[in-house]
Amino acid sequence: MRADGDYGRDPFGKAVQEAEYGDRISTPEDRQRLAPQIRQLAEQGYVIIPNALSPAQLDAIRAGLDDVNSGTGFARSAFLGEKTQRPYGLLGKTDSVWPLAAHPDVVAICEAHMEDQIQLSSLTAATLHPGQLAQTLHRDDGFYNLPDPHGPLS
Image 1 (tube, rainbow, N blue to C red):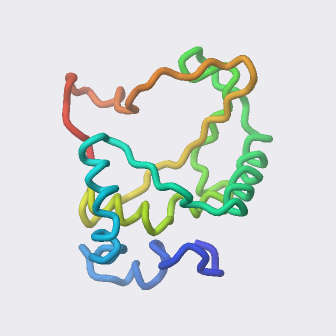
Image 2: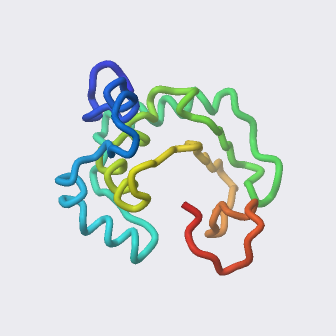
């Protein structure tokens, strides 16, 4: 989280780290306000938050991703996209992506869906270059040895 506090309450700050185990970052009021989005996630498996980021934040994210991509090669398989750059671990590579990870509405929706102990394990991006076809819709759960269909893993 940047020191300017631009993203609301700091979900990774000292106050949160010192909070009792089990406390949520979001408030009941946050989750109540977002009840339609929480319901949509449960029913449809996705949610879109219109205008969640300002144009300036989007420009900063794009610039940060451009910087990271300048040192990222192309993927090495047809499935991942041979004309696609896929930087991993973005939170450690550019501060510009923090508004995505620490957005108060995203945190509240995640806490409502997964309950009190949320953890972001990875933040990645995919930049498709000219000539790259879109990847087929899929879940990133193939590395779990579970038969299909199966329920949510988190």
